[in-house]
Amino acid sequence: MGSATESKYHEGVTLPAPKLRLANLTRRFILRRRPVDALAGVSLDVASGEFLAIVGPSGCGKTTLLRIVAGLETATGGEIEIRREPGSTRPLNAMVFQQESVFPWMSVRDNAAFGLKARHIPRRERYALVQPILETAGLKGFEDALPYQLSGGMKQRVALARAFANDPEILLMDEPFAALDEQTKLILQAELLRIWEASGKTVLYVTHSIDEAITLADRILVMSARPGRVKDLIDVASIFPRPRDVAAVKSSPRYGELFGRIWGQLRDEVLAAAQEHDAA
Image 1 (tube, rainbow, N blue to C red):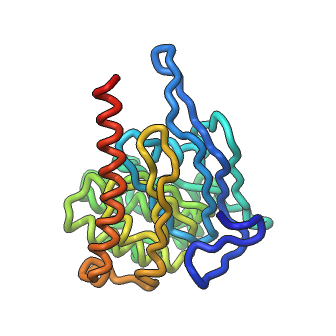
Image 2 (image 1 turned 90 degrees about the vertical axis):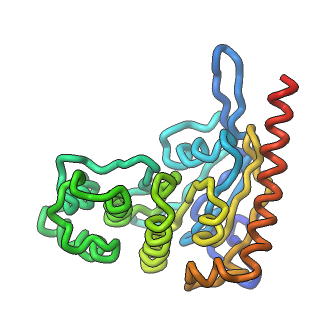
């Protein structure tokens, strides 16, 4: 953990005070009159502009953690602190979900500009703001198309464009590419990296894919089985510095070493959870 004034997330790089700080965060649900702990003592600093991937076994609280940061759920205990930019009028966060989240009656352009419209930005101005983002996301020429005319991958590009166009301080992504085929996923991973590197946004990215976490992230948070805890925090940026080429990362011998390290930890957690379930 960094101090209150600085945070180091890989050797030799000193960053300012963290954008996001979680301290001993817990979340308890009541299911069938019995308490179920989803998170237990999660502590973490996330630097401004950092891309943090979160991996863990199914049911470990990854999405719950993301929803708490988004303000969609309330922690049972602990503290969460988000350092807002001084004088900022931008949204604090925006979420991109796994399932399609475009409005079927709106054009690609209006879907991308939806957040700006909600902030009462005039139409001509919001269209001017979203156009370069649509082009960066590979949607040039489809501005007037309706969602039913798009593939699943293109719909996710629209969702990405909307999130970036609204210019949030923190971008929260919950397995946004999980439902896509492998070829489309590779293309969108590369596009996400390009858009993110240009924007410098802080990103929290939940994924079940070790491959995706290594490809995209500065650091990877490995969570334990429920109740979710911090099992490991892996510095990817010192191994694969920016700017990053997806193909070069996957062809590196160090990629295999890192994949094996993460999978070994996740496998242990999955087996432990299965044994606990069998003993219950």
